[in-house]
Image (cartoon, rainbow, N blue to C red; front, side, top):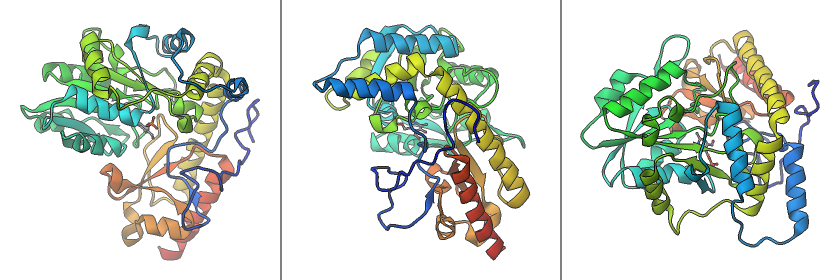
Length: 384
Ligand SMILES: Cc1ncc(COP(=O)(O)O)c(C=O)c1O
């Protein structure tokens, strides 16, 4: 049970809605722990803002009002101590288009783009789909957590390497990179003359103490090499509203980025702007309660695995509501099919360049998480 004003324990039936996560064309009763959205309703302040926007009834072309831009600027100042100039803002209907624009605007055709794997699949497909070349560099492990292997990054460089697609906090391994790590990334990019697109969509879902440090803030000169992608969508569970933005301090980079999307990438819709403004202006208490709930789910999950499924391991999740499970020990049973037979749908690690692993989304009521894990426990007990 939660003891706060917001009820994250409530199970909201999403079956029969337009939910990508819950819709199963084959009508199976699987518990979906895959797509990265949460099974929680948006905060009351957002629902209120949406209701009053809908009540108005007119849905012509929207514009980003100074009030919503101001909400973004004040959110960045309050939560990351980052002084953002509203001129840096480029509104986007989503961050996947933002990754594609980065490849188009910051690298030339056939240039090489670095990504640290395992990683959210669009990092792997955006370079190829935009006619650039992906250089996937594995993250390392130090026994406690995933780390950046700078030697491997250096070895991957060629004269055509232009861009690093960086994910911070990192989906799927759940790292919130530390300031020294970020400084090292900045130095690496400066030394090797790379631009960097830092996708920070999970930045407000930091579960560890301390605040999020945007990569662009570690050095003022380095900031001119950066495109930072952010959004209220993950934090406030608004992915279906299509809202995101890029923050690009350098005017020339911003011009190139905007030009790459001209006539192709549209802006967010009227409801997205209304939701974004309300979330950033009034959503602090809801977010604090959410983080508390996610921490409990994370800790419960880790304890459950240790007690009942010790052959499935995970490093501590520092941020996000995604757990990257090492399922190698399941041997021949280590397949998405096995988990589906158990009644649970997970994300297949292969799509992330992480074979042998599965990603589990714990952004759900604790009772849903418990049911899913119980299904897995029973299925594993039957075969091992
Ligand atoms: C790192 C990362 N970037 C982007 C996205 C998707 O962003 P959008 O829905 O705004 O396109 C996700 C969704 O899971 C993500 O994890």
